[in-house]
Image 1 (cartoon, rainbow, N blue to C red):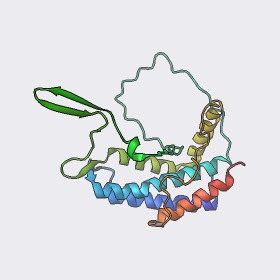
Image 2 (cartoon, rainbow, N blue to C red; image 1 turned 45 degrees about the horizontal axis):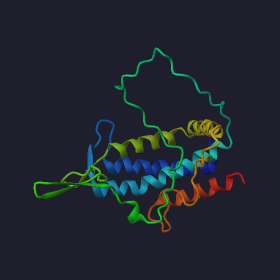
Image 3 (cartoon, rainbow, N blue to C red; image 1 turned 180 degrees about the vertical axis):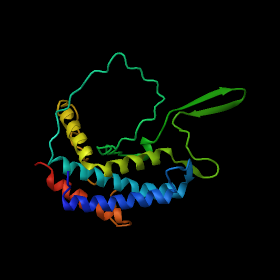
Image 4 (tube, rainbow, N blue to C red; image 1 turned 180 degrees about the horizontal axis):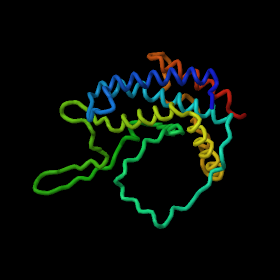
Length: 218
């Protein structure tokens, strides 16, 4: 289906930004980096988060003008066996992550500790420490960020399909009244929002968010 001019302009701008991120990571059809420098990882995420938020708002705005078949929940056939060997296709996340409100961030980060006494020494085990994916050379695993980029590019290539996905997801959420967040956009600023413009994606996100907020039902 042909896209409205405003949506198509923003889609082209976001596609150009995503292509720049692929080039920045050195990703090609035949090769993909396994680990990247921490500075490069931070630079990509700084652009990727607002780009994802902008695409979500494009998808929402487009979903208001299309029709989708009612969502039907079908049971899984009994003769289907999942081996876990097939590589799942990256799926774009249509809903904003929930906003976490912490009254006391320092206290909220406190984690349980267990101390062991014996042999004249005290050993303390911190249960809250997580194994970081940072090696001694200061590089990070690139698998997660590459999947997010692939999902974002796939969504930009077919926005009407994503809009129909969102339409069906919203229909399913209407049947669960206990959900506090029914819509795809969280209240307040979108993820990746910055008051000061640092990149072209900030201006694109501002336009997409304003258009989607105006289209929200009262």
